Image (cartoon, rainbow, N blue to C red):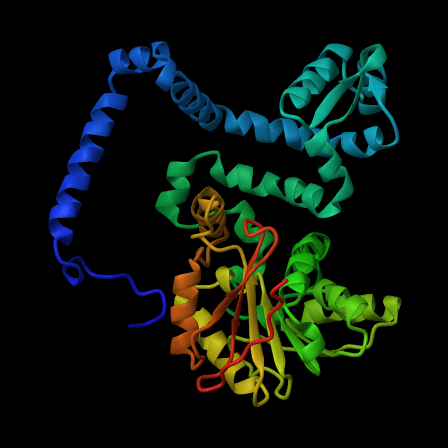
Length: 395
């Protein structure tokens, strides 16, 4: 059985009977929850009142979620978190610096307070709330929120997006997704998305660095690593590691400028992994937020190329959000499902599905390393078949 393969219905004695009873139970649940009388009763009974209220709130949040996200977007576009990081402000002061009428500023501020982005302070002032403080301290979050303007445009008519199987604004933002010759993209075409990935990469890099023993490697090749933000984070903790980068020609030019400015020595190779072989010889190859951008055929070809490029005893590091992450299922299937559809290529995958692709590409059954924030990124480590131990941080 391949890694992550599910048991078939006939694999367990009595499975069919259990499945039939489960279906009946779910049908009964749906009929009850669809009954206004049952919902009123649930709200009256002490034992069910709390559950009913939580479910009502969850449904309302789904209906109002677009408004919540636009409150966050407005705060980011107005640089409100940065301003309040310097100290609390009154509504009048926010209105003046943001070129808003005071009534509009107060409406935004109160909405942000209700979402825990801001908090009320003494003297009628507003300061950062617990969530706003995080946004203020992580530039990558604000960069992603600004970038979501393209996703909002594609999702304005979700039915049209689903029928087309591709958006317009987001596909234009990620031009390589629909380019027959991605290696021919110019500097202007890759500038916006390369800058976004560089801004958001530190959050992901911190998770990967905490999960993987990079001190056991001699040479790391980062494939699709953009401007090299991930390699810079690795180098800061492991300065003796030899570093390589592979990406599209226009992106590599941006990376070289970044490395020159920081003094970091990286062997940067330009190419398109869909058509060009990867540089050989590294005993670690990282694919950080790369595989989910591609369909199964392209992902499998990339994994096989990585298998060929790895030095004997090498390790593949596959890091990205995964759709079966416990407690974060909407992020994988709802957010990334629609995001990648709008982008025009790729799909969210479970750890089990990625394990199947890795095995098909010639790797032994991979190991899922523990990350501190799984909803942000999970990490699979794999070695070529018949090579066993993995470099994992167990702490």
